[in-house]
Amino acid sequence: MTGESVWLRVPVGEDAYRWITRTGCRRVLFIIHNVTSATRLLDVLPLFHSDVRVQMFATCTGSSPFLSGVPELLAQAGLPVLPWEQAKATDFDLAVSASYGGELSAIQGKLAVLSHGMGYNKRLRTPEIKPRTSPSGPQTPVFGLSPEWLLEDGRPLAAATVLSHPEQLERLRASCPEAAPTAVLAGDPCYDRILAALPQRDRFRRALGVGPGRRLIVLSSTWGQRSLFGGANATEPAGLLPWLLSRLATELPADEYRMTAVLHPNIWYGHGPGQVHAWLDSARRAGLEAIPPLDGWRQTLIAADCVIGDHSSVTYYAASIGIPVLLGAFPQEDLDPLSPVAAFGRTAPRLLRHGSLRAQLDRAISSHDPGLYKELAELASSSPGESAALLRRLFYGLMDLPEPSGHAALLDPLPLPPYSPVRVTAPIRVLVRQITTDPPELALTRYAVTDDGPDPSQGPPVQVDTAHTVIDEETREADRLRVADIVVRQAAGDDPRLGPPVVWASEALDRYPYCGLAAYIDGPDRCVVRTREGDLVRLSAAADPDGRTDLCDPAVYASALYAWLASGRALASATPAITVRTGAARHRVTVEPLSASTP
Image: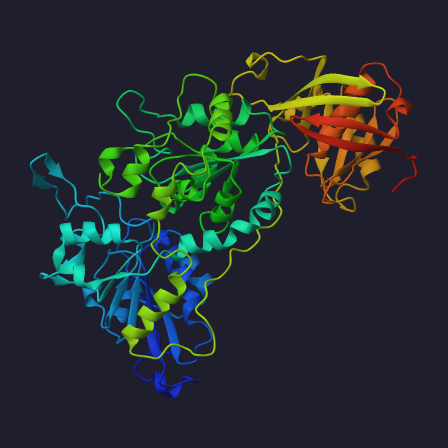
């Protein structure tokens, strides 16, 4: 990615004609600034698929402070990667960028620039760009709409400045009229992919382990010191984040809420994935999942019940598709006051540090009006669902090449993420309430317990008959295993490292003499348990009413049986099934005694 990199000889270079297989192809260059801008370019990559008349390339300007992750992304794209110096020295029929960083004026070819978020909203100052003087004081230019970005020697830098809505064109005309003739309204491919995937919401929820009766809470943050993750302000240098992470993990019952974090790529690659995971460690051990910055964030957004966010495009997209939003940070001074995102910030409710986090989330969800952001949603794109056709028409027009006649312009559908259930390795405090004895029915409320979180027992008063502690054998708090009431292990039943479930359970009881029950979770809806008295039992959940697998953590079934037996009742009284409640969800669990010879 530097001038010292080895130049490619194929499919461009001084003697490339000797080695290439297809000749006469139009050359299309994707200009990568950083991982953030690359995500938008990956959205439009399929618009050139199946066209044997086009050869695609990629390059990186090397000008961004956030270069980490770019080589891996370029390798994933699988395109020939030109060193930046070679890219500047090569002729192209079309160059596509999603940022104004780097020496774009040096590119030899028609340039189209896309936005890499929900339009152009943020004010961005660089060492080369100073604030302007205005009647209201110094004003930092709006990124992507000001002459500092759009003009080179007084002339438009791009042949096409792609906008998603006429409101952006109005602001462009006011800020940089010289560039207005290059403006092209072509919708928003990222938003279109989200809209097309909305019918898959239930599948995305199940992929994240969110079953009936459970709410998915998404923590969304852009980058920068005044973002939700940055949290810098005059009164609280650490911001809302430490309080929020501890409350997410321990104030919300583990089986009634699912927590995820969608963080801007500049956070991931600016500070390093390892550091981000370290900052989130306590919350992650309590069940929060950090969604990778490239794959899965849109699916997570679609699946959400509520988003705690800031002035990011992700938060705006969430509101646009009808998801309730609470703003944990929103620096209006960082935004163009005429932008839709700024208007959104003047409308959306705020997350307050005082008071109950759960109460605020529940209130935001139950009182949400799906039409609250209808007008703002309409500003996300003036051509929803049409960006593929509009962008392909633009790109091929710039190349002076007829569009492919054999297939329509299409974007890739959002893939179904792999199944990713909650994994809590922090100790879990289980509060049990007995509902009926014949038939057996118990209500369980489980809270993760972390050193930096509040004591679950200090929460809202609930009726509790008994309480016990469950710990995953892979916990970091290994010293707590010796005092756990239940020890659990998650693995395949035929895992050769652990032996059959019945063998592991027997060994676990020997290893942890104060443990009353050991549970080996060998499937998404089942486990094998062994009691201190020597009873061996298979616990299996009945399918949901629609026939799908119950998504409750099988450790819940083990806790229910443990509480039942700890109350002095015999195992026989729990057969053939017990009913377990977690919040509003009910799980019918089959209790099947096993013999010691069961594999």
